[in-house]
Image (cartoon, rainbow, N blue to C red; front, top):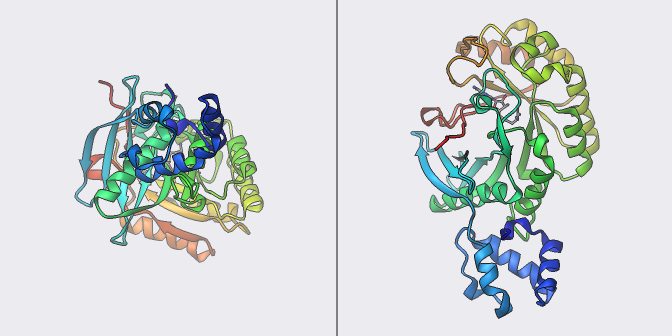
Length: 347
Ligand code: SAH
């Protein structure tokens, strides 16, 4: 039996009609579900009696929290069991404001991209997440935020997986999560992060959703990039940056360039200069992520975080060229909840 999260508004209208119920109930029913989920009390909702048991059954979440890991910095990582026995991880990050939180969602079980410095890809890709599984991550994390008296106000697809390889489900899930009548998060609060799948970036721009784009570039030339990101063989740096520019032209949204800083590999002054050249005349923001320890890379390469002085010098060099640079604060690394540390746990 499909979960209610599989239904968009036209879908639920259609289903209600099939049950012999008035399709006009659809919006109210979805609103009621999304306002409360994962705790939904249907007795307080106006709905045809005939469909109540069925809808109640469909609103029980398919996924379950197996473990909650709490970091000393307040970050919460959830290990979530899927109904086929696989698992994923998702993260809640309480914000700088005492009443807010952000979350990081997975789009796949595992990942096929093979980035050498990332743990999420080590066991490869097991499967895509369904619309329901993506929406439920949001509902579970929103509930965690509510327990802390915080409002979940932003969402990034920076957990496990490559969202562009599960784009139809990611877009459908964003539809449920962002819609003011359903999850109510708002489109602009959502960021889709990609390793640089050019057709995916174009498809996301075409979808015209008002969401943000982040591109995990990590290197300014193809040789350096291919050492650490295997998909670099398929999509050259120049084409990825061109796609990010097209995204900006089409949507008006400023893309973020993600850069996981690896000592001695992509933290050099030469890389900073090349990146500034690439971004010349392009108002993308650069997000520097000091590498989080995941042990030795799949290739056997040993990575390290640059020392703080190198990080500062890299950022300053870009800023001197007029690039807007943010340095991502490491969060949740004591419970392996930081970027690149999320994994699937086999039972
Ligand atoms: N596949 C998508 C979504 C994953 S996002 C993408 O590549 O964008 C996860 C982000 O964390 C990416 O920018 C990724 O490059 C970065 N990351 C991966 N491993 C990391 C690590 N060990 N330390 C810091 N950042 C890492």
